[in-house]
Image (cartoon, rainbow, N blue to C red; front, side):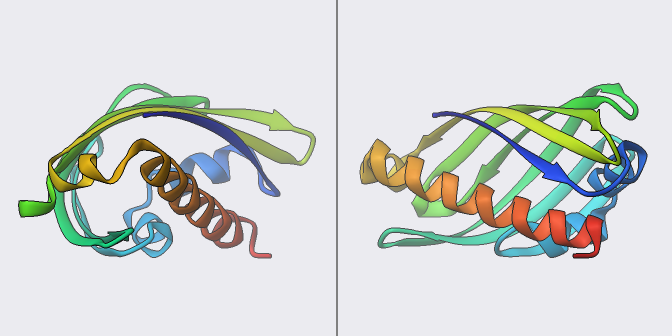
Length: 147
């Protein structure tokens, strides 16, 4: 599954960068996130409960940040296991571009899934992923810009 998009955030790039590296803000914005712990500035572990179509699962996994270029962006990669529901793994490239008094956050995602989730069909997976990404960015935008 490949997905890309962008979100304009009414905050300076340095503020957006700090929020992207703040586990409390990320935990509050990731749909279904039950916990998010930072082991180091570039390593996190998370537990996320999601429902996609008829499949509901709790995924546990690790996330690594690489190619850090503050405050312009980074790469994020991770893998999560959801028991019988299957697994998800992949990565994203996140870029922050100044836009007047705001910031354009753009992203490209490459992910693979397996197990029961993979049996649901790509259309349902793609639409669910877009919905979850949209919810994350709406909540993230509100948390960062205060609007």
